[in-house]
Figure (cartoon, rainbow, N blue to C red):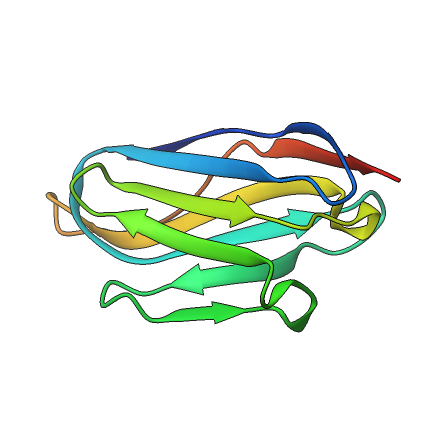
Length: 120
């Protein structure tokens, strides 16, 4: 199994910044894509940003130019730097990682979620 532990959420004023981290551990042979999603109450989980194992990134239109996703392969960790935060960025942020295990299985794991609240 592969576990993900997120950190870095909190309360910030509009215009502020936060940095989220998500560390993967367990029987990790390889990591393919890493991603961040967010979910507001009563809304569907939406994709915020992705980064492939080659470093290619993709962002939701609503966060382009403000958020930056990055990864440290040596630490099996993905980050989300969030700048110029807006109240509409409020939500629970989840990381998602997929890849292969040493046992030859494919995993697609989710973190427990971290709350981000942006006040106006």
